[in-house]
Length: 402
Ligand SMILES: Nc1ncnc2c1ncn2[C@@H]1O[C@H](COP(=O)(O)OP(=O)(O)OP(=O)(O)O)[C@@H](O)[C@H]1O
Ligand SMILES: [Mg+2]
Image 1: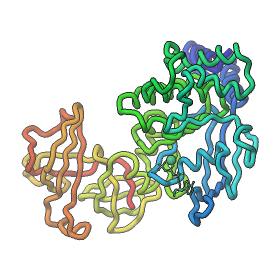
Image 2: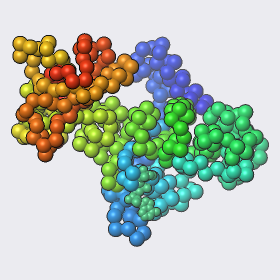
Image 3: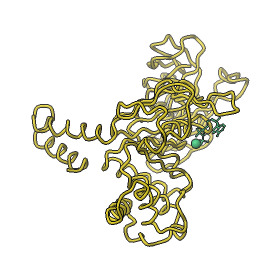
């Protein structure tokens, strides 16, 4: 039984019984999945890893810690130079580390040579052999592992089928498109049935459409094979789309690692809040539990700064926007603003405004206080146009004060 079969069995059994834990068969099947994942590779632990490149005084990894569960897909996200590739290369054994430990499936692999770690890596550049066909490229890794000719062909064809290229097996890779070449590289990585799959910006050389297609396919294949995977990107949309969890890196370590939605809704730091999604920086106050922005109360997240003069990071969809005329009796709490740009995004509308009350004219060294609001298109006040006077206020959704 393959891992995918076992997973399907678990899902089917859970469907008929309603609850998984109440049924002995399901529990047995679930533990079989876990056991198989563990046997295949288990999780990854990187503990207090420091990496300094020769000739450099800066730590590329600085007390780096990461835990990946068996079968999980973790995405490392972060700006250029924050250490994403170094983390992958250190894990794969392509770089020596100065301190810390690396464990795979509970085994300490620190110092174990790269070819003994049973990991496969796919890079940004396709790194295929141009004088070989797609099939020969995929067979290559198996040949290195001493797999016999017939078995090689069978496995390689299976992997090409998995990535949707069975009909292109005989083509030279230099005659293939970028997306096809990257599929071949992926098939080659999967052919050796690695314990761990490492993907370093595998999609960044591809155009937007192919990129989305292949991204979704990688996720499907990863779920299907149950391979523990780390995927590096600096594209937040890509990260949000495929990850079980996202680790946001900054200065050689992970600043926060959580499920995509948690990262977006409950960022632990300003860096994370501003790296993922859009956010407004609004003047306000906070006592560490509750804040006030534009005269309106809202909860603040743990880790929030306290004080009468703090910046509160509020997502555009967590602000309300009303036409000022509708609140002519003065009952509406909020701040007056002038509409600058209206972006129609289909079902949603994003409205860029500038706060027009004199109170905030000296905000941020005399710069105007710009606020972006996002709302469903059908909630846009009638007649709203550039130059309209509106009232903006935060919704009572938890935000980070910094
Ligand atoms: N071979 C090397 N020799 C010296 N310094 C290096 C080497 N490779 C990387 N560095 C440095 O280590 C730090 C981390 O680099 P790394 O390549 O891991 O970043 P990254 O997050 O993958 O960035 P990018 O998004 O640009 O790929 C950077 O400051 C970089 O300049
Ligand atoms: Mg890199």
